[in-house]
Length: 109
Image 1 (cartoon, rainbow, N blue to C red):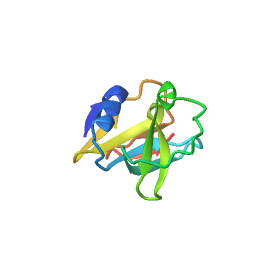
Image 2 (tube, one colour):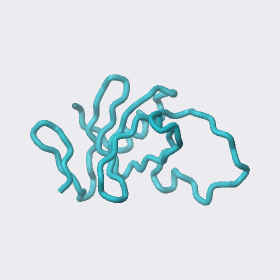
Image 3 (tube, rainbow, N blue to C red):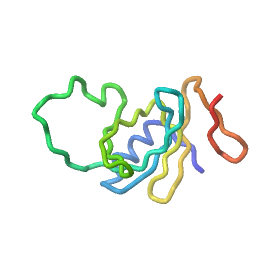
Image 4 (cartoon, rainbow, N blue to C red):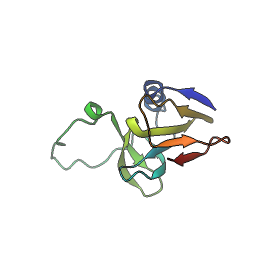
């Protein structure tokens, strides 16, 4: 498993060109979630402008393939990324809520 930074992870996601990929991240309630998703899914616009720009908050809008709904991926809490048959571990720049055991599994501290 290669280790990459968050900017490289963002770049890989943007270059996925609609391919399905998997991520794990820490949710707001401090649980770890795995998300299988993709980019470039069109949705029906409601005509209402969003109250914020996702990129200003380091968020990426994705389509969750499992529950068939749109979600926001917070790059600040990203742990792993599996894309193009490669699995990446994301470098943590700040003190975080989790660590990795000897097998590379995520555990919350």
